[in-house]
Length: 198
Image (cartoon, rainbow, N blue to C red; front, side, top):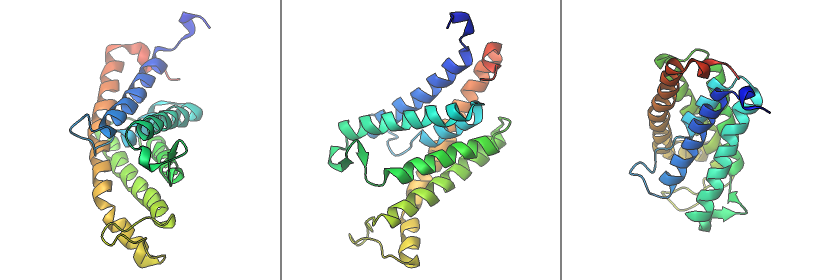
């Protein structure tokens, strides 16, 4: 492959995706003051919106999520590791893939309105899927120290106690979404070669 055949858009999109992974690792290590505000939702939306190839739109963000998870689990959360990852990881990855889909479906044209709508939808999607997994997997009720009851009351309590985390996901989606989408849109205007679809 010659240098002329490389698409600069791919390189810049990957820089945004991997920057999100780095920010997540730093936040997980309590290196930033915003440790509970994650860029992963915005990263999923960004990948879904900008990669025209379905393989790339899911593959690159999921790979970045996986690598950042492995690094965080080995460096900061070893007591929670089960193999390379953590218990219930599959639900996080399903919710993440669903957030990529939200980006594909809602952000057909990048605008403040579409990004905000997608940020809200992604936070709700993550909350519904990931916390269903917490409940289904026998997660612990932080108010009692006991597993959630296996009934609708237990599920509702699990969702209710997870609202602050969903709120943090929404804040992260909005803040990092503004940075990622705004930054890339400005870069495309400054460098027209970045607008060539991949």
